[in-house]
Length: 146
Image 1: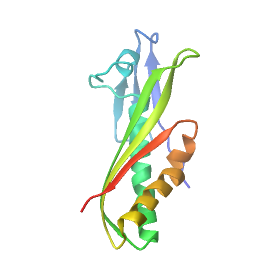
Image 2: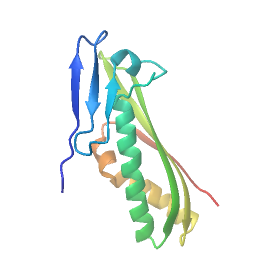
Image 3: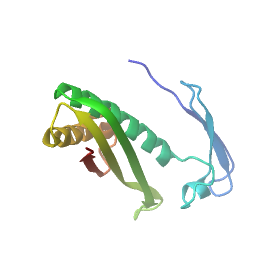
Image 4: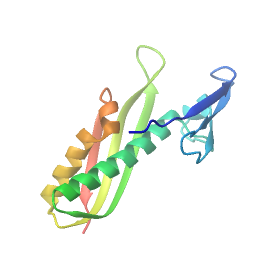
């Protein structure tokens, strides 16, 4: 299996500095990062480690869920998955990721709602990004759309 790479160039202090994160393997883009914008409610055109984790988690989860729906005999006609990653102060100092909320809305054929909901829970437990983030509470809000 392949290894994927990203690279960040940073200049300056935490509060005054800024950087750029490059998605090196795919070469799809270079994005600005800044701690003040990372810690603000409005991102102001920059990305953050938390947003990149959310992107990784939502896409990994969608892939795993589609596989599990197929294994259950269903067809994932459409899956809409979002991940909300929350950054907050750490009581021990600094900051920490305090939780990740996965939200999935699915249109599937060939399985019932109970099988769909089982697949959503199994995907949460077995997608590689969920496994990598085991130190963080991951919640799930799933529903089958008709």
